[in-house]
Amino acid sequence: MIIKNSFLIFFFLFCFQINAQEKKSEFTIEGYVKYLPSYLDYNNNSNSEINHLIHNRINLKGYFKEHFSIGFELRNRMIYGDNINISNDAGIIDLSNFFIDKPKFKLHSMIDRFWFKYQKNKIEISIGRQRVNWGINTIWNSNDLFNAYNFIDFDYVERPGSDVIRFIYNGDNLSSFEFVYKPNLDNLGVMAALYKINKIGYDFQFFGANYYDQDFALGGGWAGNIRNAGFKGEVSYFLTKNPIPNENSFSLSTSFDYSFKNGIYILGSYLFNSNGLSNSNIFNLGAITENVLSPKNLMPSKNSYIIQTSKPISPAINSSLTFLYGQGINFLYISPNISYDINSDFDMNFIGQLFYANVNGNFKSLMNGIYLQLRYSF
Amino acid sequence: MRKLLIVFLFFLSYLIYSQDANNILKQSEEKIRGVKSSYTEMIITVVRPKWKKEMTMKGWSVGEDYFTSVVLTPAKEKGTVFLKRENEVWNYVPSIERTIKLPPSMMMQNWMGTDFTNDDLVQRSSITDDYTNTIIGEETIDDLDCWIIQLIPKEDAPVVWGKLIMWIDKKDYMQLKTQFFDEYDDMVNVMNSKIIKNFGGKKLPSVIEFVPLEKEGNKTIVERLIWKFDININERFFMPNYMKNLR
Image 1 (tube, rainbow over the protein chains, first blue to last red):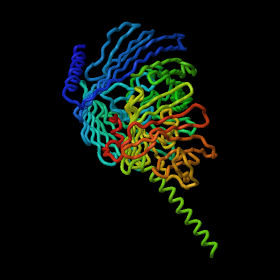
Image 2 (image 1 turned 180 degrees about the horizontal axis):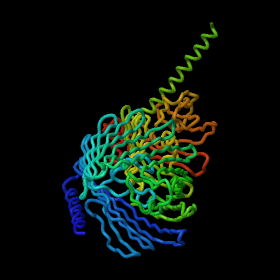
Image 3 (image 1 turned 90 degrees about the vertical axis):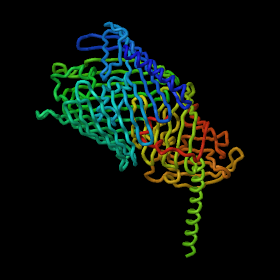
Image 4 (image 1 turned 135 degrees about the vertical axis):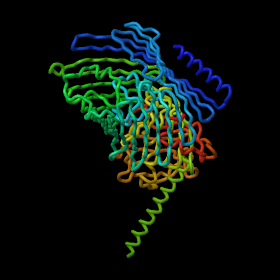
C-alpha cells in the first residue's frame, strides 16, 4: 500500500505542478458508479446465490505541453454476497489492495491504467499500465496478445491493463508500425511488433512476437466488407520453443455482421481453438465463467459459434440476444439483454445469462444468472 | 430530321438543366463544407414525447472525402469518434479502447439514437455523385426564393432513400428544407432549417430540425454553435490511429 500511496501523492503533486506551470494544460475526470445486484441459480446442485456489487470507476487524464499526456484509472469494488472472488493484479507491480477481505464482504481497489505518453507528429511513445488492444473482432480476439479477457464478464468492458513500453510510428496510407514490450519478472515476457496497412478497402495487420518463455507467435488480421456486410478475422499461430511436437497452437476467429434497414443488427462469429476440447468429459462451468483468457485458449471448445442480434426499440431502449455454442463439449450459452437510457446521467441494464451443457451424458441447465445494472456516469 | 433535332434539343436542354441542378447542389454543399475544410461545434437534441436527450459534439471535415467527429457530452458517450475516409468508416469506442471498422450496411442505422443515420452524419454518400438531380420547380420559403431540386439515387449508390426533394435558396445557396422519400415513394422524413446566422462571413441556418413523419412528437434538433471554414486541419485528425486522441 505504501507504493500505491506514494504513487497517488506523486500523481497529484505532478498534476498540481503542471497546472501551475502551463496554461495550456488540461485535466479531465470522469467515470461511473454502478450498482449491480445479481441472482445466480445452480441447477445441478440446487444452490442459489445473491450478490450485491457497488462498482466505481474513476478516469483521470492530463494533457500538457502539447505533446505529453498522462492517464490514471482506478476501479473500486464493494461486494457483498454468498460467493465472491476477485482475481489478483497480474501486473509487474501490484497496484491493487483489499481494504476489507471477509468471506462475504470485500472492498477492493485496483489501478488498472497508469501511463505516460509522448506524442509528436508520427511518433507515439507510452510507458506504464495501459490497454494494448490488437483485437479486431467483436467477441473473440485471436490477435489480442496483451488484454485477452472473458467476454462473459460484462461488468469489466475496460479490461485489465498490461504493464508495457509501447512505441508507435504512423506512416503514410494508414500504415503504422508498433512495438510493444511487456517485461515479466519470472520470464522473458512478451516482445511484439505489429504492422498495419490499409489496402483495397481493408484494414490489414500482421504481427510477430516472443510470447513468454514458451512460444513464438505469428499472426494477422483483417477488417473489410463483402458487399454491405462487415467481414473481419484474426489468425494466430503459437509456435512452441519446446521441441515436443504437437504443442503448437492455432487460433482463428472470424465474423460477419450486417445491419438491416429496420435497425436489426446481426453478428455471426466462428472461433477455432486448437487447444479446445472436442468432448464434454472434462469440461466444467468454471472453464468459462472464471477463466481469465489467453489468446491461446479463448474458449474451452475446439469449434465455437456465436450469433448475436440487437434491435433498438426506441432511442432510449435497446435489446439484444446472444447465442453461443461450443461444439463437441455441447455447451450452450444464451444471454438476453435490455438496456434503458434513463437520462443523460443514468442508465439501466437487465442481463440474463443461461448456461447449458452435457452433464453425465444429459444436456441440461448448469446455471441461470440474472443481473440488474444501474449506472450513474459523470 | 426536324424530329431528331427537336429530340436532340430537348435532350440538350435536359442536360443543361440537370447540370444546373448539380451546380446548385455543388455550390450549396461547398457552402456547408467550405472550399477546403470546415470545423463545427454543435448541440444535438433527440426529442420524444416523454423523453429527451442532449449531446454536444465537434466535427472536422476536409472536402467531401474526410470527416471526423467526437462526442463531448453526455459523460457516458464522451470520446466516441466517427471517422470517414473516402468510402471507409470507423468508430472508436472509448470504454473498450477499440477502433471498429463499420460495414456499409451500418450507414443506414440511426446515429446514436437520433433520427438521422450514420450516413447523414459522415455523409458517406455524395449528393452530386450518387444522385441524378433535376430542378423541378421554384418556391418561396420565409421570403427567400428557392429552387426545388429532385434527387434520385443512382443504381448501386450506397443510399437508403428512394428520393430526396430539396429547397435551396437562390441567393445564398442554403438548404432550407429537404423531404426524404422511401423506395415506395412515401415521404418519411422532413428536414427544416431555420435561424439564419452569419458563420465566418457566410449566411447559414444555425438550426436544423429532422422530423420523422410516421411518429408524432419525435424529432432531432441540431444547433450549430461554432462553424468555421477553410481553416488548417492537421491530417492526423483523419487517421484511424488518432481517433483515440480526439477531444
